[in-house]
Length: 77
Image (tube, rainbow, N blue to C red; front, side, top):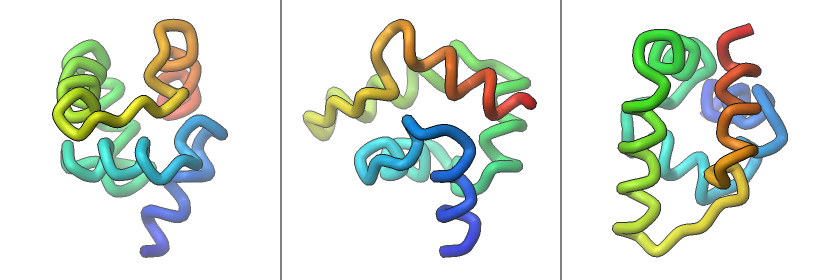
């Protein structure tokens, strides 16, 4: 649970239950895991998270076109 709480603190858009659910479903349950996935293939991560969002009918604000790049940048820093 601690790692998930830290993940939510990486960027305000990640402090959303829906967004955290989508990231965890992709195996991203910590800031280190997000940093790794964002560095390796950010576009694939976004695509997979968006696919999960459609599957579950979720629309977290962090997945909008402009905002998703912000939390990816925060994850890399």
